Length: 226
Ligand SMILES: [Zn+2]
Image (cartoon, rainbow, N blue to C red; front, top):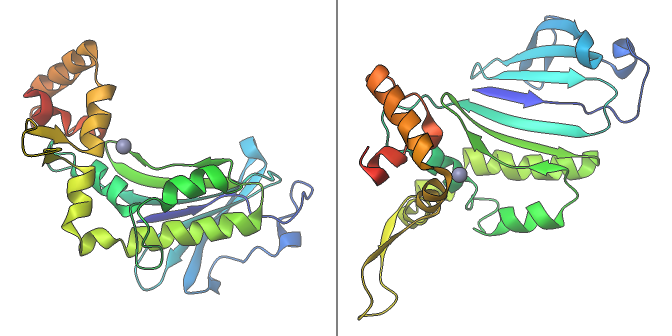
């Protein structure tokens, strides 16, 4: 598990002023996280501090620089074992209600109504990550609490209907309606994959048959029988 926190300085400071904002030293322990490494990252004028959580081994990367656009990200290694699209479905499901924030529509409300400059979630071939950014540190911390509770206490662990909503399900609007398939990730994938993209998936699948190479398209193989 990787936890990544980007700039959180209260106000602009001159480059090289890491000491001025109180960065810890290697070996220090802050809230259960031990500092393993500190190094400059000249390209973005930053100091990088790599922490490791003593109990769980979770990594936390703190990036301190002059950027006033503060950011926070939770990242999880989610290497897929097959083409069912499970990591992508769970990415959606974790943001569909948690113990502390049980509303399934809260993500959309916060996305449009909070003071954020970026708010999203992504699944790649090896990672699922949840990035946030805001020019307000107070707003960022509130959103970070929402994302953290969503990832670690999601309601999907108790409610199968959330999985069916996000993955796929059969639907009939009334007794006489035809049986149809629906689902958020299912629909997203139907819209995302073009004919040439399917051809590329086929090429990769044939070339690397044992490798679930791209999680985003993971549900597609089942959907299109490719
Ligand atoms: Zn998606």
